[in-house]
Each structure stands twice: as C-alpha cells, then as structure tokens.
Image (cartoon, helix red, strand yellow):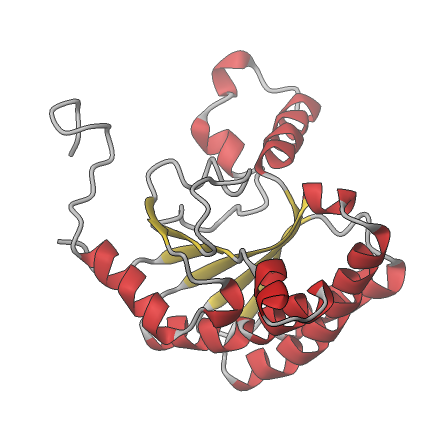
Length: 235
C-alpha cells in the first residue's frame, strides 16, 4: 500500500471540449479551467500533498491560433494576480516551471513579483508549468552541462536533475490526466519516470475533490515498484 503522494502533477486537458459541450467559445473554457486551479491546489494542500504541478501552457501551445494564444496570455496575467493573493492567504508557495523568455516584459515582471510575494510560504508548492516542454527542458539541461564543461563521467542523473526547471523538487509520484487522453504530451517525462499514472474522462473544468480523491485512492491501493516489472529488479 502507498500513502499520500508528495508530488502530484496534472495535465489539465479538456477546456476546449468543455466549452464546446456548453455552447461557449474556447476562451470561456480556458477561463473556467483557470477557475479550477486554486480550489484543486487547496484540496491538495488539505490532503497533505507537498507539490502540485499543473500543465498550464506547453511549448507547442504557441502554434495555436494567434487570438487563442493572446487570450491565454491575458488569462495568465489575471490568474497570476489572483493567485498571488489567494496563495498568500492560504500559505501556498507559487513557483513557475518553464520559461518566461517569450512573455512580455510586463507579464514577466508580474510572474516574478507573484513568485517573490509567496516565497516565504511554507505549505503546498503550486508549480505552474508555463511555456514548458519536457524535451525542451532536457535540451536546456544538456546545454547547461556543456557550458559547465563537465567531463563525460560527470554527466550523471543528479547533474541533469539539478539543471531542470524542477531542481530541488521531488520526482512526480502521481500523474493525473484529465479529458480521456492516454498520453504524457511531453510533460515532466524525466520527473515521471516512476510515477503512477491515473487517467480520467472528466474534463479539467469539471475536475474537483471527488476526482482528486478517486486518483489518490487508486494511488494508495498500488504497490509501487521502482526497478521495472515484477521480477525484473523491482524493490
């Protein structure tokens, strides 16, 4: 049996489909999805989870229609303003996992200010994966090691891990994907090497405590093995 996961990651899929099912524009689906972030983070904190990483915007999302990308960036600004204050109130530490290089200077400053404001909080760490892609992250880590002029012998798992966006965080214990899709979509692939996977048909705007508890119950019922299949070196 397994206890409460230290690190939960969620692929927040289904905003567009939720909007379509409700006869609304896609932007309203994204807005509804943003509204689910803090309630889910608070529920995770109440259950003793230490880290929650949410896939908010991938490196591939820049290829979406320009109007949709612009709407997502505006939502990011609104979300950061809201989360900066609610996280401070609820003792949640805010962290960005990804790059801010392609954000406007004003939005970069807003993100940095929100992270700084909540840096002293001691509860759950809420990590927003924005402009994030696991392959891009690994390329950046490799480039950092090259810049350090490390020897081949010094290229270790630990060396790579400390050059990832998630440096200092534990690996993912439980990865949840909403919306019925059965893939990782370039999300935390290094960190999820031994994660338990949980897939639900529930769309992210409808994801709540019931779905979270179902995922946690499934996680608790599993016997985790870190070396492969049973009989193949598992612990």
